[in-house]
Amino acid sequence: MATPLEEWVEEQARLTKPDEVYWCDGSEEEAQRLVEIGMTQERLGDHPVFYELSHKNFPNSYLHRSHPTDVARTEHLTFVCHPDEVTTGPNNNWMHPNEAVEMLTKLTDGCMRGRTMYVLPYMMGHPDNPFSKACVQLTDSVYVAVSMRIMTRMGEAALARIGSSDNFVKGLHSVGDLDPNRRFIMHFPLDNLVWSVGSGYGGNALLGKKCFSLRIASWLGLHEGWLAEHMLIIGVEDPEGEITYMAAALPSASGKTNLALLQSTLPGYRVWTVGDDIAWMYIGDDGRLWAVNPEVGFFGVLPGTSMKTNPNMIRCLASGEFFPTLFTNAALDVDTREPWWEGKDGPVPEHVEDWQGKPWTPGSEKTAAHPNSRFTVSIAQCPSTSPEFHNPKGVPISALLFGGRRTRLIPLVYEAFNWQHGVFAASAMGTETTSAAMHMVGMLRRDPMAMLPFCGYNMGDYFRHWLTMGQRIPHPPKLFFINWFRTDDSTGEFLWPGFGENIRVLKWIADRVRGRIGARETPIGLMPHQGDIELSGLNVSQEALERLFKVHREAWLAEAAEVGQFYEQFGDRLPPELWEEHHALVKRLEGSA
Ligand code: OXD
Ligand code: MN
Image (cartoon, rainbow, N blue to C red; front, side, top):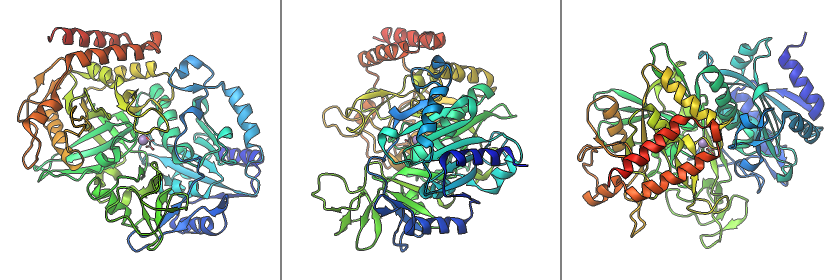
């Protein structure tokens, strides 16, 4: 008798009509075969799916050039399909599930003709963690199949977990004809299903990542009492060998992977990487909040990655221990056949092809690598990966950090008075947009907990869930706010050097949670006493430091007014506690004249 999994695969094959159905086992030998197929047989328009790169400095690396219109997540084509629109919330696009299924069925009918359907069984999370989920994605893209092997635990463990049950997360993916007018990334939280057509881009097509591990998982977390968050996870080791684990929410393009792999400039300190993008957090038997990274790879932004900004990632990309490493939409140094990108160490090569394979020179109008070009690489080969990454339980979290790109207002670091105040401040988080293509440059986008594009249900209910979790965690972490991006009003230059120097801020946070130092009270939260941020060997003037911590009363009142407007859209789904915190902040600011 066929198992529910076999039946489901058959049903999807009847709909999509592939020439062949191939079950992946996740082995290295198989990945080599798939890459070979991508270089020789499978094509994307007029070019192969993979190009071999030189293995001299980047062993086992391959270049993928995407369709030119398929280079980023497409939030306007991303939907949550729950029968109730209000449950979905103003933060999501909504379509009724019946309507969505009807539309997608038409779009998917026969879409894999002439192609192979790859069946990818994979785990999100360590197989021995009870919160882990067994998933199966079907795809007609060899690029997606190979990428999923890097990003997830693919193969036997997932099949063993599923067995003859119907308890697995389903993902149906087809690149379709890559037409943006027929591109939809649809989530069905009641069916544990993601259905994605028309895109091969990571965030739209690697369905274990944003689609499942954040949008669907956040919904599961709401009902099962845990948190699925857009957070990196690190351990900060001090000279005594004590490790303080932290998780940090940062919106896309605000230095998250750099912070996750930070190389300390302070002697005796070291940062261990547990994850760079997603944290699943649950209450442990000891009453603390524990975090696991459900992924096993990095899918990070390439431009700007260098020995200065992220030396551990450069070493990771050069390792070649795990097969393969992918570079998507990087430029190509034609003479050496190495990937190239803006911000890479060393001189600009003499002969460059841009991300679309066209000749490029430094005088060209556009960048050589696409601004959202990416690497896909195994976490196993990263020199800063924590030994605890392999611990099924994950790591106990002492501090939750929230940050964004704010050239003004937000200080270098401050601590919330308590959990409720921290949830309020995290719900009010914003970040300045950097890409003219999607938003106006320098515009502030509110992005609560960096989850705006990823929360799979009404954010008002999400804030309530956060407040409830705070009451349920017997030993909750402390909440902190960080901002590396504050600038000098007159010169526009950054006031803080950032990158490896951010360890100095992490040290203050670790010292706070370990009760080693005090803090001073301000209207917005608790801030370091003068001298408590370790500045030895750093060229930051006293004046710059003062400006990094300055609380401008009028500007904060204006911010509070904007947050109030942002809150309005959630109506009575917004927990009254957050309005209380909002009023309390305004009162403290008004009283601080
Ligand atoms: C990502 C994102 O790719 O947040 O991680 O967009
Ligand atoms: Mn992300």
